[in-house]
Amino acid sequence: MKNATQKSCSSWWHWVTVSVLAFLSAFAVNIQPTVVERTNLFGMFRSVMGEVEPAHIIAVVALAWLYHRVLLREGRPFSLTALIVGGLFSAFLLVGMSFSTYEDFSFITASKRQFALALTVFLGYWAILYAGIKLLLEKLDGLALKDRPYTGLWHKIDRHIFAFSVLIILVCWVIFWAVYFPGSVPHDGRYQLNMYLGFQTMSQHHPYYSTLLMGAIYSIGASIGSSNFGVALYVAFQSVVCAVIYGAACSYLRKKRLPLPLVLGFVLFFAVVPIWCTYAQTVMKDTIYVGFFAWFTLECVKCFFGDGGKYGCLRLAISAALVCLFRNEGVYIVVLALLILLFLVKLRRKGILITLAAILAVSFGLNGVLLDEMGIHSDSKPESLSLLIQQVARYSIAYGDDLTEEEKAVIDAVVPYDKLENYTPELFDNVKRYCRGSATDEEWSDFIALWAQLFLRHPLVYIEAAVNEIYGYLDPFYFYRGMDAYQLYNKAALTDYDTDPELYSTYVTSDDLRDSARQYAYLWQKIPILSFLVNPAAYVWAGILLLAVLLRRKDWRTALMYLPPIFVVLICCISPVNGLLRYMMPVCACMPQYVLLCLRSKLPVAADDSPPAPKTAA
Image (cartoon, rainbow, N blue to C red; front, side, top):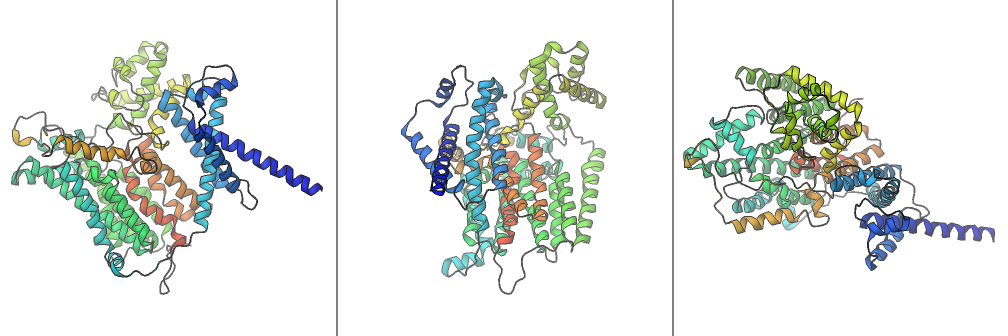
């Protein structure tokens, strides 16, 4: 009788718990991020919840059943990994809600009542994220990948997966390119062409060798036909290069016996997700660099698996050099990746070491000494210190009266003090355009010293300025709209400094047709689930989940391979724009390789093969 009573009480508390958690989750998902003013607790929750509808009740019931099955059911073990990752993601969402609405922590810290509301939302998200991540981890634990033989058309596709992948990707890209023919030339692309053609002073603001390649191919096309042909020739070149690289990545996934349907899913990812088709037809530095970065990552993964082959180190060295030459900060990513390989891979250490030495020599010689001798200098200091300048600008607006005339003079030496009023929390450009190019190193040093002093006075202002620059890389439901995600526009004249009609590039299709293609690209942001494929924060979440799976298995060596993309994300977080998809593209392009690394222990092994584990140091 006593056991029956205890069981009854246990069952009663079980259903109370799952019901409360279900209510909290439904509440968190449905509320509007509002700063409440009502003093009554019930009125406060009522003001943010709105009218209770049948859909809300259905959601509570469904979530209660989910939590009953996943969280508290006997025999379902607790998951510390899901708890930690779920809490982290819940915090990301809460910060995104507050800053996307108020540009500060108001939704969380406006009052004690507000904090109680925010805590409720946090717990609601935490519960549903814990349940979802726990289910995912359990599925991965029980996953057994199988490689089966194919017949007919599927067999032919499997045998020629590289050619098939490249063909499908190019066909889909060409369809979109035809709508925007000869290609889009946004501001950055036109700026690079201006420098190559001599209408603007050459600098390292955009990578010099990227500008050189772009300008040379454009000039060849323009000399053969017209400016439109020059643009089209460069678009064709970068499209073929990137399609071959992405096709090679998909082919390698299949070589490692990842199931063919999953590999074809990655082929479609590159073919139809608008990230790739839009930038394939855009004349700017990012497209070709992302391709080179994906190639370098692929060669690193091959080296990790011991699959480099006879020319593996040569391919690794070439791809590494291209990453360094086509992105100003590329050398840091390459050096980090090569040091990791040097530590992990027992064989080929000599080749990796030679590659590392060669990369340092190339980067120092070509990007440093040679360009300095040519008088091509970097003007990127404002960009590299954009976060600091944004923080000082926000400080000047909030606490400008606290600044002395001497302190204002220190700021004015770097950026005109009266221009700080143009501060925009998520975009540095509105202040950057006024930064003084004549500022000396000493003036910058004084500015940095003042920046440190001001932080000690009002640290919260600095923290809020920093979060405004990064929350777009944390909240997968937020899309930054202050700048086009896909750069689908053409500046028409390739230069403002010449009136030669041959230097004009214009679309040949109608506005209506291009608008339809543009709507297709932006439609992905509005479709549930698909929207995650075009959201930079979603790739951060995916990377964290993959890394958590590896750490949960105590596979520390494979987890180290994730440090380069983590470094890319950190660079994005100090970039001039919050949550810009273009900055996250290198990570997006490498996601198939990182999925492969995560599934390494699950890969099927043929009878005549050894396990696909890397040859690591003892």
